[in-house]
Amino acid sequence: MASFPPTQSSGPNPTSPSQTLKIGTRSSALAMIQTNTIHSLLTAQHPTLAFSIHPTSTNPGDTDKQTALYAFNAKALWTSELELHLLEGKLDLIVHCLKDMPTQLEKGCALGAVLGRQERRDCVVMSQRRGKEGVRRLGELREGEVVGTSSVRRGAQLRRLYPHLVIKDVRGNVPTRLRKLDDEGGEFACLILAAAGIQRLGLAERISSILGREKEEGEWYAAVGQGALGIEIREGDEKTKALAEGLMVGREGKRGMWEALAERSCLRTLEGGCSVPIGVDTQWETDPTQGSPGDRKIGEDSTDESRDAREHTTNDTTQIAQSPESSGEDVLTMHAIVVSLDGQRAVSASHRQSITSGEDAEDCGFRMAQALVEMGAGDILKEITLNRQIISEQGGA
Image 1 (spheres, rainbow, N blue to C red):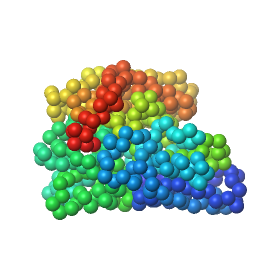
Image 2 (cartoon, rainbow, N blue to C red):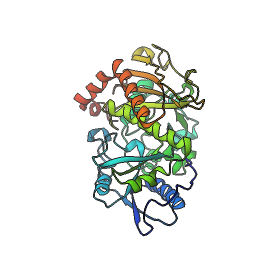
Image 3 (tube, rainbow, N blue to C red):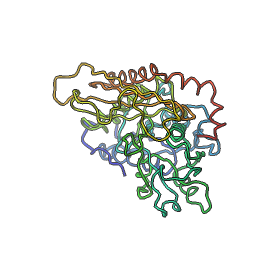
Image 4 (cartoon, helix red, strand yellow):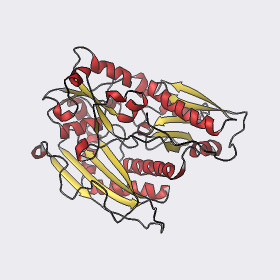
């Protein structure tokens, strides 16, 4: 299970001891585990306060288990009902998987804190049948075997990197998906899931292999905010804001928020959501004169597999903003990719920038998006927006 920062005193209690603060969440097992963790942290920091958890399962993504995610064409599948309760005062804060939060929040809502990001990568979960046969990686699957995912981003990368595989949509919470995977006579050879969710559910033994940006991990990009928890609050609610910010401890707490702001700024600038194939990978450096590990050069393709079948454009941009004089300055390297739905075209770029504030982080994400657009990412995203039907015609996510 991913670890969270240690609790520490945050000074005087920002709310009255007689008030019960209501925490909203989705009702899935994973959401409840994550929310209980936040509840425990808040209770430890503020033992004189009362906190209660209020789950809901009426968000569009929860109530409709049949429609593929790409078909919703919505950016708040998992958050809309919860945000309504927050704005109405029925909730004081919401615990989300950050990757499920739209980058443009409802008016009156704000991102109060980001924490808990330890594992941000995707993973392969093989069926019990294929696992017993020793198969652990996507490249080991036979032509025509079926991979389950409800993510457009994952589907596009699968088509690009593993064109010999068949992709089919799979919906439901993680335990439901695993049951479908392991059904005797089932069609799925494996699933692609967020590793953090599997770990938090106590199912780490089901992870067959990790998918990351490093070459040995498959040169694979995760979703914006993946692996982190986001705490959403009402704008202007300074007391709850102080509670949320108190959970972000020390330098790592600041870095977690800045990472999130940079990634979400990039996605927002590109006008993307959970239904577009945009992936990111961010890394922190302490010495801005050294290149980030794994930086690719202009024109270098990301894989040898099916290289001739794809048109691929890669660009490296470097921007080192004015840094503080201290030796421990925070330099963020962002890597991002936009992939066409059929996997035939991809634009990727890298951007490095010193970060000393949330504004710096937002600017870093904006510049990252600019670099992608200059290399042609805008054309790919425009095609997706104008003709979303192509996704359905290709068999889903």
